[in-house]
Length: 439
Image (cartoon, rainbow, N blue to C red; front, side, top):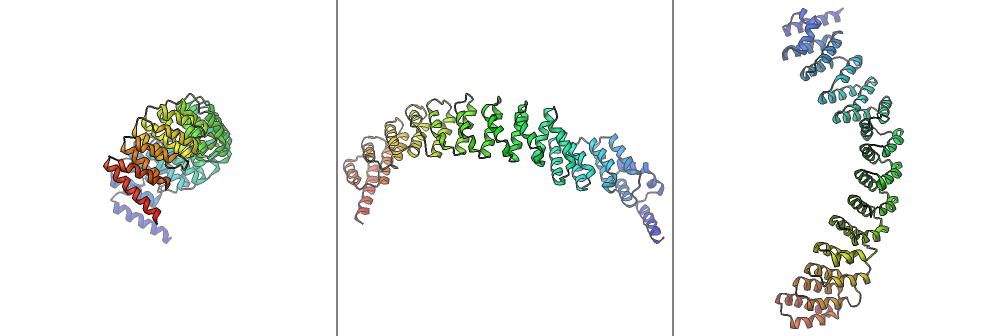
């Protein structure tokens, strides 16, 4: 009895403090009106009354108002009021509200709110939000479903994957980025062969993101002969991310593909996979490749491999390419990637290039070899070349070779040198060399 009087007393005190008559607050319609259309004070008063009394008819009435009016502010006021009731006790009301909502912001808030209740009643309605066209909402639904881990969502997700609508299948693959389950593995892999190229692309992203190694045979097939260039490129990138060395032979086979972008991705993939067996085939591409970008990538790959396999490609660039920067890079690649005998012969030819930078790079590269006669080649370049840049490169390569016999030869050059700057450089090198031998 005391508790009853205490509750009644509190209600009367609240009514008096809010300056609202009992008949106004007890009337459900007036209460709903205060929530949906009242000013800020009446709204706060109504919410406080609901918090204290929780009138049973209000949730249903507020739901009807919510469904009849799409005013965003009004809907947010209704949600605020409904949150004063235990969510799980009014799940049907919340489900209807969630299904009807199309506003991205409110949808996301509702998904978070209902997920936080951990009531299984909301699993399927939230899963159904994976079908809406608003990407942020789909993502939020997937994230919340992952947290819940409730298998009730699986039939909804499966229906997406089996839909004849390619958009639904894409949404299915997107969802698996958050809630991948091995039970969907075969379905996801099968979509790598989907008739719709966008679905195939999303399937590549899905198996890659979820590290589904069982998809590798299908990915190799896509990379080799899909009829869409973008799909093939993404499949190649996926094979690299899987570090799939078993795809090396297939990638080597498409180096002559008519599609320039496929050739480029194939070379980069072989480089990243360190598939050294492809070195000769990659190098040979230089004899016929017209794309400057691909030639750059090929040279980068040869340098990375420290192996060219074949001299013909580099020789073609050094002797025929119109871009001196390309010739410089090819000279450098020859210096680091070929065996000594072939490299020296190729670099020797480069010493007659019309561009002083190419000749200088050839001199620098020759400094890495100890083959008999290399010093003589460099000495001769110092004697005959008119570029101080080239002569200096040759001189420093001679120092790198570190042959005592070269000191006398350099002194002979010093004795008749007319370029005072270069003569000073010679003097310092000869002096250092003599001091090193004396010690």
